[in-house]
Image (cartoon, rainbow, N blue to C red; front, top):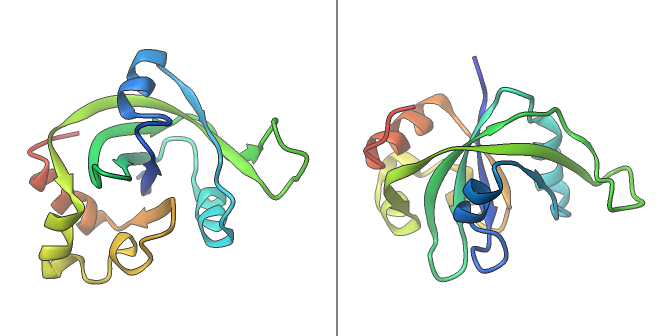
Length: 138
């Protein structure tokens, strides 16, 4: 059973469309201590929602984690880790932050409670609810 995650990205820097076009990427740039803790917990086979920050503020696609965490080869700090990610599919209907915040079901969701984190865990129940909202099946 995979674990579920939400990975944030600024679409003007790297979007879900970029991931689809490239077919695979190294998910890097995470420096926050708590977000790094989450990133270190990700395992090959886990699945993630790709969430666009900035003006969009919405989950837009699904991705598969295809590596365990490993030290960022671009950095000289072993605490900074990355994972490899491949696209699975776009969401049929993007799920906005406003829609998530409007649903009391998500009151404990890390995206709502710790909005600044770039990597957050998603429970199985939250994942299922988000896919329903996205009108998407995995």
